[in-house]
Image 1 (cartoon, rainbow, N blue to C red):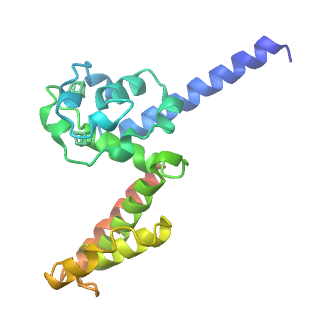
Image 2 (image 1 turned 45 degrees about the horizontal axis):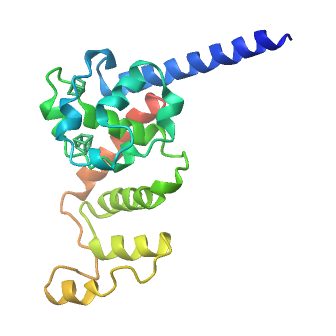
Image 3 (image 1 turned 45 degrees about the vertical axis):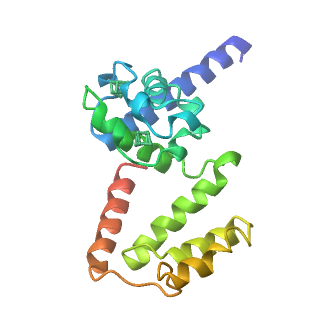
Length: 196
Ligand code: SF4
Ligand code: SF4
């Protein structure tokens, strides 16, 4: 195969694959990303924007242009704290917080060295909600330190929080645990259906 034909095929393949991912994101969030006109109001109010290399409005712009590969290893979605300020401020009704959440799901298996700890914390947080219907802070801190190999991190805070009644060594279950677990089950079914 001549070199240029191969290169063209590679480029076409990349563009096609990227447009599939963008369509997947649009299906998951329920709106067209083209709604955004890059005014930047979302980034201006985002409390995590100063830590992000690509600001929230830039993430949407990259997706509009189909730059999925560039977003894939981007740490910004993992630094988003889901505060929904961007969503509230957007004059176009773009739910950017949902876009960030969808990106985290789609690229959850991609290794990004700078945010390994963020991913560990994110997974443990969700696991606790799924298992107990509420947060289990002691388990979260303990498992986080073990999985992130920082065994003594913040250990001096433990006794202080315990004696103030802020840290229970045992988990407490939410009385509506079954309902909460059904939500997790439903979300997982929806995501499977959407190929996320
Ligand atoms: S505020 Fe809305 S329209 Fe403006 S850049 Fe952000 S997402 Fe786009
Ligand atoms: S939801 Fe995420 S992206 Fe939006 S303002 Fe909050 S931290 Fe920033």
